[in-house]
Amino acid sequence: MPELPEVETVARGLAARVTGDVIESVWLGDKPQPLKSPAEEIVSALERSRIAAVRRAGKHIVFDLEQNGSEPRQWVVHLGMTGRLLVSRPEAEVAKHTHAIARLKSGREIRFVDPRRFGRLAVSPAFAAAGAEPLDISLEDFATKFHKSKAPIKSALLNQKLLSGVGNIYADEALFRARVRPRRRACTLTRVELRRLYVALQKVLNEAITAGGTTVSDYVGSDGSEGMFQFALRAYQRHGERCLRCRKTKIKRIVLGGRGTHYCPCCQK
DNA sequence: ACTATGTCCTGCGAGC
DNA sequence: TGCTCGCAGGACATAG
Image 1: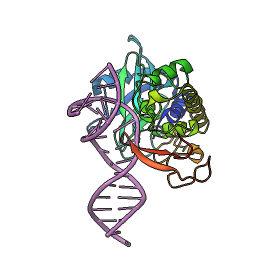
Image 2 (image 1 turned 180 degrees about the horizontal axis):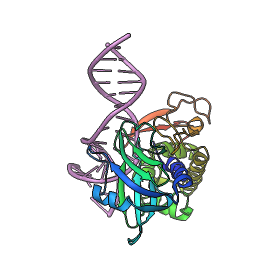
Image 3 (image 1 turned 120 degrees about the vertical axis):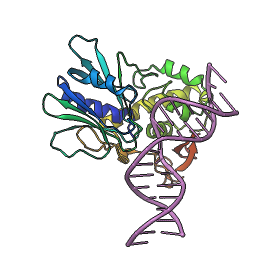
Image 4 (image 1 turned 45 degrees about the vertical axis):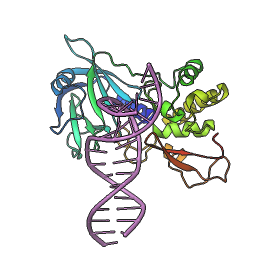
């Protein structure tokens, strides 16, 4: 599923390919829309706008738009579980579950495809993600945030109001690397453990960005290519397999907060 | 004010 | 082999 590294990969791919292009027209599907803003508002904000930049904020992709005679606006896309933003040639077959198409002056199209429809489209004058960026936050702020939470540390990592961009895969991977058990209440983590978690989280996110993200089922970059980080996972979806650290205990799978959670009962305390 | 749980949605894989 | 059923989970609503 698209988390910070996958969204970063998509945003970079889009930025490289559509920055400076102009959206000439927009098509929105008719089904119950995966929209957060009214359809007319999205269409009027996008049409005749120049894409000044594309970037990531948390798990959101933000297109900075410039339109003559209007205040700068932003087109905000959340990919949900199965969302894809693809740059396509207009003659390319329109995939099933395509919910939006932005036709560009260059002749290409940005297509939003999302089978499960957990994704969302919105426009905003000044979008800001709720929580802090995990790659920008200081160790001190990180420690303070989690020291105040009574939730299990894994649930706290997934809470987008604390940190923006961490999802199920990288929460499990960071906790594995930091040797912290997912069920531990966040406030019980020692200073040393919080530091290990902070370092592990940044490391795993950066490594995954370098690998172009993790493709478990649906995720692809804006050019349709799959990520490579699924081959570097140490905990996520490895239940029943031997732990790569202690080499003897089998990775366990539990359900925590309704999410599949993977950890080594021997290494993670 | 905080945490916990249910809901949305479709494709796929386990199991009979 | 072919079918049914339940699981997968990000964000938000609602319940506790």
